[in-house]
Image (tube, rainbow, N blue to C red; front, side, top):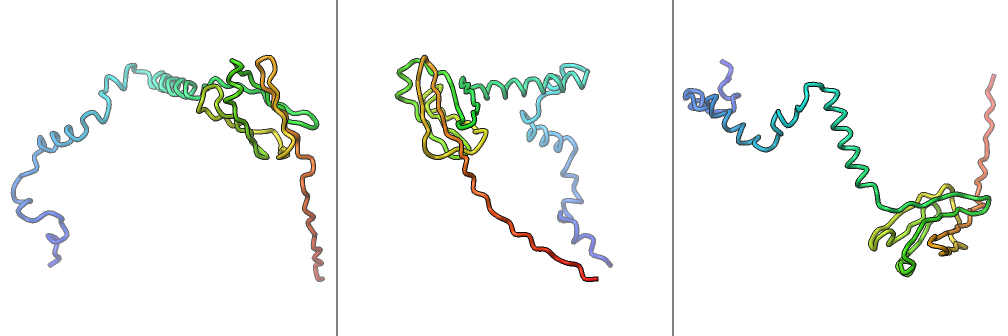
Amino acid sequence: MFPWSKMFPFPKEYMKDDIFKQTDVEGMMNKAMKNKIPAPHQMLDSTNFFEQSFDMLNRIQSKKKKHKKTGFDANVFETHEDVIIRFPLSPEEKILELKTTHDTTTCYIENVPHNGNKQSIKLPCTVKSNGTKAIYKNGIVEIKIPKETNIPLTKIPIEILKHKK
């Protein structure tokens, strides 16, 4: 005979007694799931599924917008020779706390609009590592970064293969 009883994970004495009653299982599940899933009346305020979906989407997007707003607004544009970043800074005393750095693709501005904040601004093109100038005038900081004009080019030799006829 095939040993079916050995394949079942519970011993035979569990199977003889009716120890798992439906009310016990429901009680254990309710205890385990308590406060994990919101009550049905909290989930379904309306009978319109699409209305609920749009409401939920709007709530999520408004939370994201609140987190994104840092109070920092910089204008970035480029001329033939420079990339220029302009942003307002007030009061004038904050200029001493301002720290700016950049690499070839990104400009980093620290302590704006508040101490401890770090802003990163993606530059529209590659820039040189030297020659950057910053000016503070009439409540506006202007950073001029020279563009990299000598981008190294690598020659690629082309091998010509001839087909044999």
